[in-house]
Image 1 (cartoon, rainbow, N blue to C red):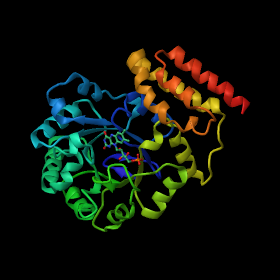
Image 2 (image 1 turned 30 degrees about the vertical axis):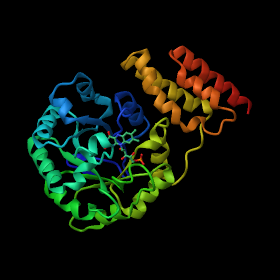
Image 3 (image 1 turned 90 degrees about the horizontal axis):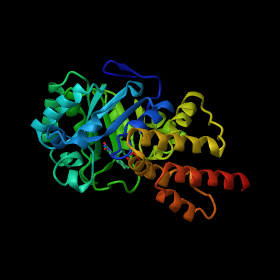
Image 4 (image 1 turned 135 degrees about the vertical axis):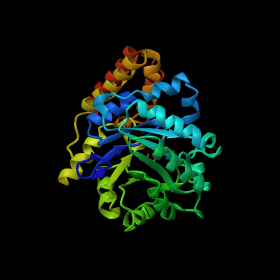
Length: 328
Ligand SMILES: Cc1cc2nc3c(=O)[nH]c(=O)nc-3n(C[C@H](O)[C@H](O)[C@H](O)COP(=O)(O)O)c2cc1C
């Protein structure tokens, strides 16, 4: 599979862009576990052109994480063009435009999935951004605004005509936010459209190696993008890639193997940020990690982990879980 000049192995699996989740440490970790391509958190075009420090920090990419996609959002064509140029200078491999974010502060103002209500504006921005930069531009969007306006099958071709190099479709409407189930049938329809020649990346509710394989086989997508299932479980890419390559599930590793990965993530975050912010950032991953699911009487230990203020404190609690785990 090819996106512009980037070539991928069979059945590529990508790490989805996720705000406050896919910072550089997490992207590197997912890459190390087999993610074929990783996406930055979305970057506000308005904040970027105003040189807001926190936003500019999102422009950092590492050589080891390539190919890496940088994602921008916004509702104003000029700001998006200017932001695209700033991003290009940071040398990502691809620039992605977010037309899928459902949250009120973005979609309610016309950005992100809000653009699904103004497809002409969406196409104007896309064409202008494609023209403004030399790197490939891709788009990530949803099925439509709501159940009565699932416009993606009619929108994919005009987006392609703007010159984008690939299209990611999250199989939900804006109205669904993150509820209900992702509907992959329209993703499959876009892929089957004989006039579509750019890669279609399917996204939504891929939480296991089996579902990942099914998405490729049933809907014919060129790549699968995984979001929430990777939070607190960056090793999921290894499991998916192994299953896609062999048709067999990887054997479970001991508890300590996965725990050491979470610890590595904490340490990498602390190293890049500082102890306080690194720990804060890691909490989100620890809170939802499947590693701790099903441990009896775990609630108070989990609360203690999420309250820990130092690496030492956190690792002591984690090690105590390891000990309990060995005895159950
Ligand atoms: C915490 C969180 C942050 C997200 N931030 C972004 C973002 O910055 N850009 C984007 O395009 N999508 C964002 N998304 C949506 C995901 O990229 C993805 O489309 C969605 O979670 C569905 O995939 P999944 O079922 O594999 O999680 C976010 C999702 C979550 C849960």
